[in-house]
Image 1: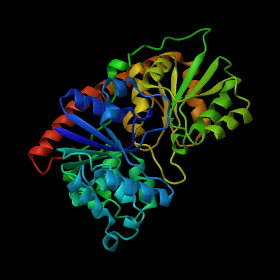
Image 2 (image 1 turned 90 degrees about the vertical axis):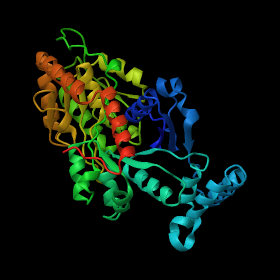
Image 3 (image 1 turned 135 degrees about the horizontal axis):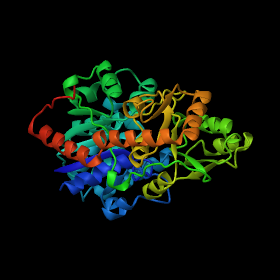
Image 4 (image 1 turned 45 degrees about the vertical axis):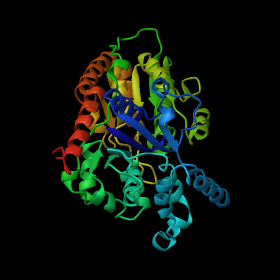
Length: 419
C-alpha cells in the first residue's frame, strides 16, 4: 500500500505514537510519505527518524505569516511546478477560486496546503492525525489532488478545544465523506457519535508503545537513595504541571529525599521555572527540557513514580490518553494522575495508580505521600500497570490491527466499528 500521513508537526519528540505507526507500517512493507505543517523546533530527533530515512519522505508547507512574502512564495511554487507537475498544479490552483472559497482563497492558506501535495502521488490510504487534517484531506480529495481512503485519528484537542473555537458542524463534511474515524478512546468514540458521526464509520484504535524499548523493572523499596518522581509532557496548560509542582512543594520538606524531574519544553516553561523559585523548591524540582525517547526511557528506569496532573485548559483543550502513561506503566512505574478524559481507561484507580479530581493539589500530594511511605504498594501497582499495557497497548499488535483495518477498508467501502 501507498500511505500518506497528514500531521501537524514532524518529527516531534513528544509524539512517538505517530512515529511508531509510521515505522510499523514501513516494517509491514508499505510505502509511507509524511505531510506536515512544519517540523517541531527541537535540536534532537528520535533515532528511528534517521534509521528509516523519514525526512526524505516528509513534505512541509511553506506558509509565511507576512502576506506579501506568502504571495511571493506562492508565485515561486507555481513557477517551480508549472513544467514539472502541470496537471497537479492546475488542481492546486483550484484553491484560488475566490468566488467559491472567499476569504479562504484570498488568504492563500489552502493554496499553500495544497502545494505541498503537488509533488506527491496518489495513495491507497490517507491517514490523518487530528480531525482538522481530516478536513483538509477531504477538501484536497474534492479538488482531485488527493486520492485514497481517508482515515482520521482523533486524539483530544480536535474534539475538545477545536469544537469550541469553530462551528458545531466543523466535522460534518469529514463525517460524511471521510471513510473511517479512529478515536483513541471510548470517551472520544462517544463524543463522535454525539457530534453526529455514523457509528458504522467509527472504530476505536488505541495508541501503543514498543514494549521492547520499555523493559519492565520491578520497583524495589529504597532505604537511603533518593525517591524520584517524573513528569514527561509538553509544558502547556492541559498538562497541569503547575499542580504537580505545588503538590510536591507540600511534601518536599517532610520528605527531603524526594526529587521531582520534569521532562519537556513549551510555552509555560519560564512561568513554571518562576513558580519553582517562588515556592522555594528548586532543591527538589528540576525542569530538564526536551529529551529523546531513549533518554526518557533511561529517566523512567531511574524513577519511582510517574506524575501526570492533567487538566482541562481554559480554552477547553483535553488530553486523549497520554502515551507517556503507557510507557511509564510498561517499565513498572505506579501512576498518580487525574480523572481526566480517557486516562481512567488506562490507569485503574487503586490498582495501577491513583486518580484524583483535576487541580486538586491536596489529593495529589496525599496520593504521592501514600506511595512514598508505602513503597511495596508502588511495586504492586507497577506490576498491574504492566499487565494492562501488554494486553491493550502493544504497538506491534496495534500496528497489525491497523494494517488489517486498512486492508479491509480497501476491500470495502465500510468497516464495522468496535462496539
